[in-house]
Amino acid sequence: MRKEIYITDYNCVTPLGFDVSSNWNALLEGKSGVALHKIIENQEPFYASMIDSEKLNEEFNRFFDGAQNDSTEFTRLEKMFLLSLKPLFERHQISDETAFILSTTKGNISLLKNQNTLLEGVFLSNLAQKIADFFGFKTKPIVVSNACVSGVMAIAVAKNMIQAGKYKDAFIIAGDEISEFVISGFNSFQAIGTEICKPYDKNRDGINIGEATAAVYITSELNQNEKFSFKVLGDSAINDANHISGPSRTGDGLFASIKNAIEEANTPTEKIDFISAHGTATIYNDEMEAIAFNRMELQDVPLNSMKGYYGHCLGASGLLESIISMESALNNTLIPSKNFEEIGTSQALNIIKENQPAEIKYILKTASGFGGCNAAIVLEKC
Image 1: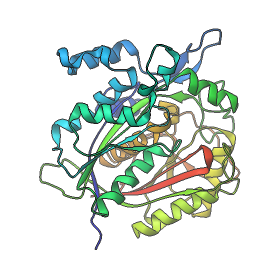
Image 2 (image 1 turned 90 degrees about the vertical axis):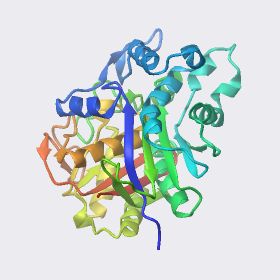
Image 3 (image 1 turned 45 degrees about the vertical axis):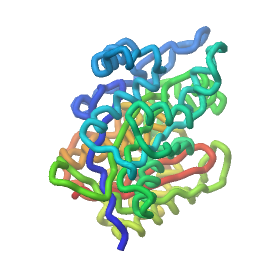
Image 4 (image 1 turned 120 degrees about the vertical axis):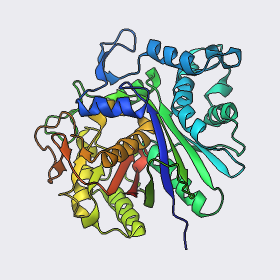
């Protein structure tokens, strides 16, 4: 019989706050981190969700003081990672059987702007090792970097490796920051919206880039001190091999990922209470998702996208949005898909339009990304 795997703790650092409670309260009030920012010289400001660097440094210095924790030793992204993981580190033990997993798409890519910087700092493996060494992890770090499904896949990797007996528990961190490299890349695909993003809306015109870090603790052994637990029932990741940036028009990859995850979870689709979807507000992604959800007969399940609050946080998005979906279940409250007004996909979806009470036991979290990758997990509130 397979081990049961649980998420029992989490934290996040975002433009809406430096812990989960501040984020949740901001979401209840309908606040968004998306605003106009001028990031690249000689370019007009554009909408993005960006953490205030001054507040970040203040928070970092408040929690990490002392000569050995000199803030100049850490990049901006590393400070975000350390802040997100510190509360979990203080509440849970690290052993020889504890995994450390880092999810990111670009890591310290901003270091490339400084020609005097050693290139080794850009390597994702070195970033993971630096964070692992700081907290004293004893196992070799694992890096999950698979475009925008990385955050969801990191949960799946932890679940499957614990079930295989490789580890007893795992700490997962996920994060990316806004950089000129990321902005230039999405601009080359003409994917960045000119206005605040509107997932699934008929007037959507593209994404808003965001940044955040998130952390979760996942284990096969519950104890009496856990304030909550969510069982990871099923997972799947499928590549539709459609295009380097465009999703399958038939939703094949996402459909297969959802189908496999639900089958492993042994949870009929009619039991799914809520879908935390990817919802980037690009024309083709939102349409593909609508098709895949309808193929799975999930079109009537309440659904939201968090991109209107956080923007698209790349490697952090899947983990951050999983955390918010679990908060929704704990608080018995569905959060609306911000900025949605009128359906803009060819097939119907049950988009949440306002805060509403709901009993949430079974959650489906999905993600899709460049290169045709798609991922899904099913969570159960215990």
